Structures are given as C-alpha cells and as structure tokens.
Length: 148
Length: 112
Image (tube, rainbow over all chains, first blue to last red; front, side, top):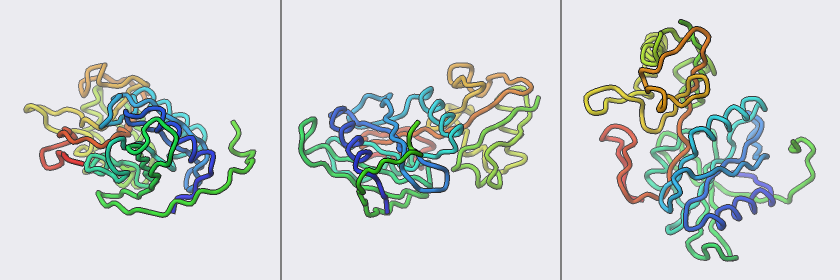
C-alpha cells in the first residue's frame, strides 16, 4: 500500500495537469528504509514528450547526491500518461530500476489541463512484474521533520 | 589507479549490498572490467554491444567526477587516482507506442 499525504498527492496531480499533454515526472523522497513519502521533488521531463519521460542526466545526479546527503531514497517515482490509462506501459516496466519505489501513474486524458478528477494509481514494479497496490491519502499534518 | 565507484540500489546484488566499491583502471572501460572480475555479472548491466563495439547501455548513466561520460568519451573516458565514478540508472519510461532501443533486441519494447 502507498500512504501519501493530501498535499503531496495534490502537488503530483497539479504537476501532471500543468504539463499535460506532455508527460510530467518526479519523485517523492523519504528516509532510507522507512517507506515514508515525505519530500515532493518535481523533475523536468528532458524528453518533453506526450509519450516518454526521462529525468535530465544532470538533474538526476543532483537529485541522487541530495538524497545521499540527506539519507533518503526515492519512495515514490511518479509520471503521467496523458492519452491512455494510468497503468505501466511496456516501456515503464522495462525501464523501472528502483525496486523499492512505489511507481505512481497519473492519468490526465479525461480533463487535461482543466480541473476535474484524474486517475491516481500506484504499482510495484520488480523484475518485470507489476503489482497494483492500494493508495491511501491521509490528511496533511504539520511535521517538523519534513521541513528543510 | 584506484577509483571509488558508487553503485545504485538495483545493482547492489552484485556487490553484496555495498553502496560503493573500489575499481582500478585508467579508463572507464578498464574500471568496468575490473569491477566485473570482482563482481561477476555487473558488466552486462552497464555495457552492451552496439554496432560491433561495446558501449554504455542507453538507460544507464555514468558520471566521472560529476561529468556525464556521454560527453567525455564514453567508455574511453580517462580516470585518475581518487576519482569518483557514479552509476545511476535512468529514471525514464512513458506511454511510448514506438520502439525504444533500451537494450539488446530481446529487451526492445514497443506498444503500451
């Protein structure tokens, strides 16, 4: 199960809507081994494409260095599908290389940049095996540990 | 030349869980050969044959002292004593309906 707070959930959805029709991407990091999605980090889609996403190589290095310094790992890796359902594509499955991450897919095909509901689904992708999991959105609390 | 090589989570099965290992060589290619001798199987995850010669896999990023080696000579990039090599899998994917060259032909993906 993915447990995610309302504010982070909404930030991911807003990012997906903003970048529609291109795919949006990013991570939510958290303390290593704790499975707590705490720090929302939107990333630039270097591919600027409606059918592909890839973190920029320099951004990727900076992100992992920052996580290293903070003792964090990517707890959520999210991206959007803008024309099809929010289910991992064959490309997503082939390229999933964070075995500990929750892969979140946001589907924006219905309302695009406009307000309205989106699909928000989460998966584990390990060795080519996809397992969908429940998403539990919890109220955002004031948590001093998540402050910079 | 001894260099520190940072290993991503997905490849730590080859390094007994170590986040960093020592590699030796004067080029990235030599460092990877040295890694392979101590951690059999890891080379296959980093390198593939492309047009008859070895090249880094498309969705693996390697940095020497923070420089992406794609801009510094790829596998021929020189390394020096105390340099740091960072290996990071690309974070990529998408609802691509076109063929993505993401490995050898058996892992070519299409559809979605």
